[in-house]
Amino acid sequence: MDCPRCEKQLAVTFCTGGRMLMCAYCGGTAVTVEMLRRFAPQERVDDIWRQTKSTREKSTRSCPSCEAKMRRVMSEAGEQVVILETCALCHIVWFDESELKAFSPDATEPTEDEKDEAAKHLGVKDRAGASDEVWRFAGRLRGLFGG
Image (cartoon, rainbow, N blue to C red; front, side):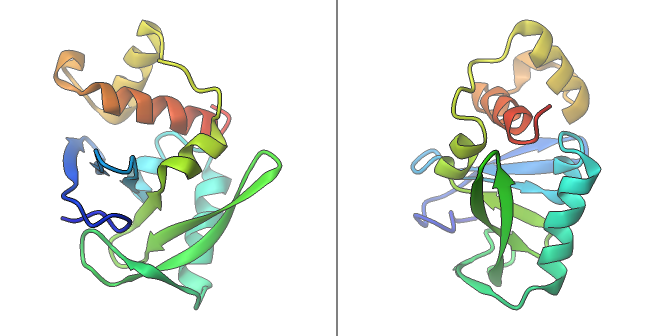
């Protein structure tokens, strides 16, 4: 699967309840709506999904899974509005690195307790088997949704 932004190969990380697709080149990340629900308040995810189903605004980027054109939706990040790309067919939300940073500009490396909590939410049984990128992503999602 190729990155919708830079077209480089994405790394796939499987966790209970979903998968993450991460780009080592541009820092973008795709996450399934189902996995997003593990971190985000229901109303925020519902809003993103509602927009995905109702919008006709297409992105120029293709879904990394099915290659259909994704849809553009808006989400608030504090006082900032960020445009996300979503795929209604694959239930994927794409975050450019700058979009994740906009949601959590002061995100730091998660503590050991936060890693344990993220592992529980992600369904990772052996924390040592998950990459540092998974923990950074989990920390950014925590900042993204005020968790």
